[in-house]
Image (cartoon, rainbow, N blue to C red; front, side, top):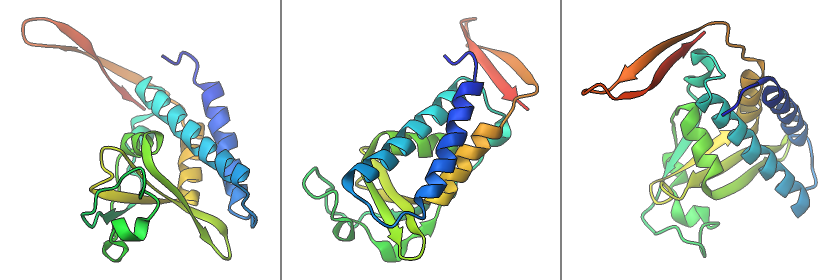
Length: 182
């Protein structure tokens, strides 16, 4: 459990700034791709921990994340073909599909597919990803700009008030508190 959120949020702010700089990079050796992947994975883990620790306002923690979704064609996604995206997903049937913040973090943290997309003018542009659980259903896309903006929003978010309601199951078993943060 996170007791003090400030250091986590400072780190996310740094990650957001660093990701923005990577959008202008033109040369991508393997080591640079690894650093970007680590930045995104660790950043998403930090976001998920802050959400679970109730260290964010409901406005930020329940904010929908702008994703695009591409349906699987039907061929099983495996360890030997996961990188052949054009054979596995229908990129002509992409749909905008906002999803919850927790969904995004879990998909990226547990990614089975994780591939960068580049734009000739902007360099690093987006990430294609999906977890083991949804790899045979959908592939998702998020822009690097949206990820950096998300990390920044979490980094700047401050909880000013909290309302706790004890959740009790039938029979009197105490579960936990529901928390609403503003």
